[in-house]
Amino acid sequence: MNEPIVARHWLHLAAPKAAPAIATTTVLALARVWNANGAEHSVGNAVLMTALSLGAAAAGACASLGNVSDPLITGTAFAASGSLALAGVAGYADGLSLPLLLWSMATAGAYALAARYWRTDRRETLAHHRQAGERREEHAHIERVEALRAGAQIEVARAGAAYAEQLAAALTARAALPGFDPQALTTAGLPQLPTSERKSV
Image 1: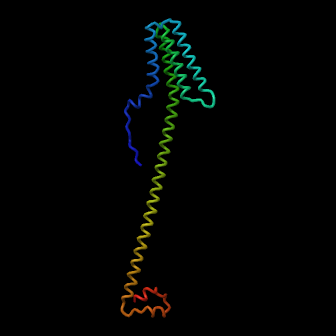
Image 2: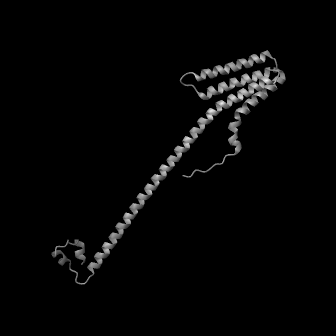
């Protein structure tokens, strides 16, 4: 019933919080490497990245429509579209000011979207822990009630056994008294003794 307490490493706790910044920074760094290797002011590369970004956005829009829309696929498609757009601009631009501006906007947007999912996950986790605690308390209460009931039954059985022993001892002691006559008790109007006791006397 007791759950083990698991202490998480600080990297395990910090990794989800740093993931959006790491992702956008990685895209910016790769785009600047691409810029340094011939993508600067390359119209063909800009058209390619624009087409890929629009294609990913269209895929996200299609995934969000209909009755069977999947939020994970939709979010992934739109994230890919934004990443491709950021990479295209950062690779095409000759300075760092516009890529850094887009990087900061993309990072802020990623954290805004992630915060919503973090809040939902935290609420679900708290609700799960609360329900688990309520179930544990209910089971513990049922166990305590059953233990009390079993203890009461045991005490009743012990009291019955003790009463039977005392009754048997009293009957045996009465039968051993000198001058004891069961027939005299019967004629006096007292309840008749069992036949087995009469025969034994």
